[in-house]
Picture 1: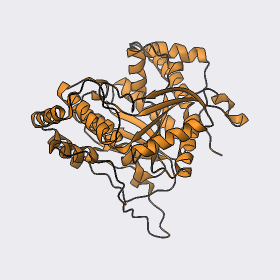
Picture 2 (picture 1 turned 60 degrees about the vertical axis):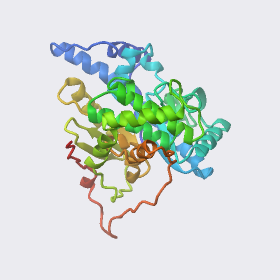
Picture 3 (picture 1 turned 30 degrees about the vertical axis):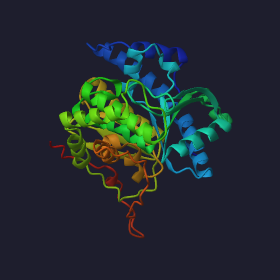
Picture 4 (picture 1 turned 90 degrees about the vertical axis):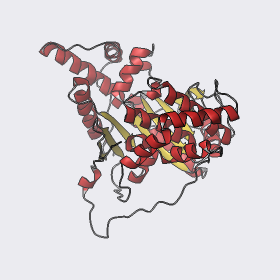
Length: 383
């Protein structure tokens, strides 16, 4: 039976650690170092205690996709500590009240599937509905589109009671919308800018805003605010693409990183992705949530300590070959976005995603796969 991390501290301690994480942690001696370590230990324990609820939501949504014949992928991830600290600093949200400290994402092939899955979840779901943000029917000003729902975890067994009420966020989006969101993050990673949180090149942010409107139009969804009529926005997209060399930059990102999707390792459901400053991506595979959370905590301590400026995230997918499809931003896979940007600059409509068969090469019979193949390094980010 799988074991999941439990909260080892009081809720009072969790709230106090959140208050401390919202400020600067200054380390000048051994005492202040130990104090900082304790704060992160409490925060990590709180985050890790969301793994079982996160997995329950993941499986519940996946079941409804299979039952309804809805094509798409499921993924789940706990929030990065750096993102937790940013949110604590920039908003009034408290650590123990954070809605998205753990989240699941359903990436559906088309908008009809998104509507169908959302309806099935509303109709009957094992966890208590808490809040909803319909960013598809009411897009954000920056062009972000996705349907967000938040649930309170409801235990179904006695041993699940310690996780009662943990909040899990579910995002449901189309592959076209996903290609937009991950392209924003990929360009931000490549250029060293936090475009996702509106920090960086205004021209890139404007380009993404206008392209989002084109994606919404082709999917029959409302266009976001502050965008001109179609003829004017096509002209502006062409101009921005020319000035930024956007297609060229995106093609460089797409071709610079290569991911071997020909290896399938059936054990292990958690993948630790470490994106380093030299554009090296490392992937480690784990079957145990306690092991992967310990490994993540170690890397994040190094990040907070300044010994590395890498980005680390733990994700759950059902198959290793789905890792790039669900988190393409870390692997430079912006091919769907590039293809549609090219079409738009030619005055053509963007195309909704169509799933093409993927060739998967499995290990030869009677040959046990080498787990070391699960750690890969990707280099060659040359402009």
